[in-house]
Amino acid sequence: MNFHEYQAKELFAKYKIPVPNGEVARTPDEAVAAAKSLGCDMWVVKAQVHAGGRGKAGGVKLAKTLDEVKQYATDMLGMKIQTYQTGGLALPVNEVLITEAADIEQEIYLSLLLDRANQCLSFVASAEGGVEIEEVAKTNPEKIHTIQVDNTEGLFPYACRKAGFAMGMNAKQVRQLTHIMMQMHKMYVELDLSLIEVNPLIIDDKQDVIALDAKISSDDNAHFRHKEFAAMRDITQEDPAEAKAHEHDLNYIKLDGNIACMVNGAGLAMATMDVIKLKGGDPANFLDVGGGATAERVAIAFKIILSDPNVKSILVNIFGGIVRCDLIANGIISAIKEVGVEVPIVVRLEGTNVNEGKKILNESGLAVISADNLDDAANKAVAAVGA
Ligand code: ADP
Ligand code: MG
Image (tube, rainbow, N blue to C red):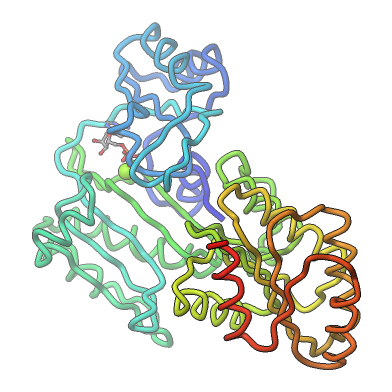
């Protein structure tokens, strides 16, 4: 799950990571009240959406008067923002953050993420912050520093100091950076996060190091340990089909292709998508209906799949291990009847009572294309799209 900047900054403040004072507002009047209560004479009005790149898209504005605060808040609230990070979606702005304007001397990039290749947490830091870090990685890779955190020993202050000096910081700044990195690591572990990104982390005119922007993602699988996160979820920022799937505990990720997949088990879903690609097709989604492929869950899954207008055929690939294939077949039939699926459906069942399952499908009178194995199923699903 992703967090808004203002939520991330609240969490930063709890972990004593310095952030500029700020308040969130949902109306232009609230924005003016927030600006007054901050007691400064210059503000930045920031659109709250689950994406970076807002600066370039008109979602970050410097206001020198309260009238300007009101004007920018009015402009931003209700608008939709599309940036290079929104994945083609335009995200609605329902909240703005009114925050103190900082005097920026330098913008630094700092993030902490799960480094799968090295099987540890790694910090990525660069003195060339503020801009798109992907650009820096391409043009000046030597300006990006990676600090790996040992899984058993944890993060040592000397590693943070080394990163600070490598970025040309002075002793005072290095001390502050070390505190920030140690706290980021503590927060990442305690809150089961999957990403903390601060871009920019700034050095201000007083030579203090401050987090000017904040982006956090958490690991949904650990939310049972962090009940307070449920209230922080903002589904207006999520893909509607993915949000609906989440509500029903289905793992659904929309993709660009036109062959929808309904599979039980993440590994089987990955394999199914691979075989579709191998046969020259393009998967429309990843969908794991989980262990209990019941009629209700299959019906919801069909509805989610069909909400994507690109879908031209559906491949159902279900292994009856815990659930028997005859029960799954009945579930699929009642779900198809309930939802009214109009695109071709290829079904491949395997496992307990597979013959009974196939028989039920064949005798259902529905236009279900039965497949004998995954290879056969993928061929049929790809052919169905072409037809
Ligand atoms: P995004 O990453 O979505 O573009 P940022 O919060 O990083 O949004 O803001 C973009 C730029 O706007 C920053 O790099 C910084 O130069 C400027 N900026 C953001 N917040 C402030 C602030 N409080 N004071 C001064 N400048 C700011
Ligand atoms: Mg930023």
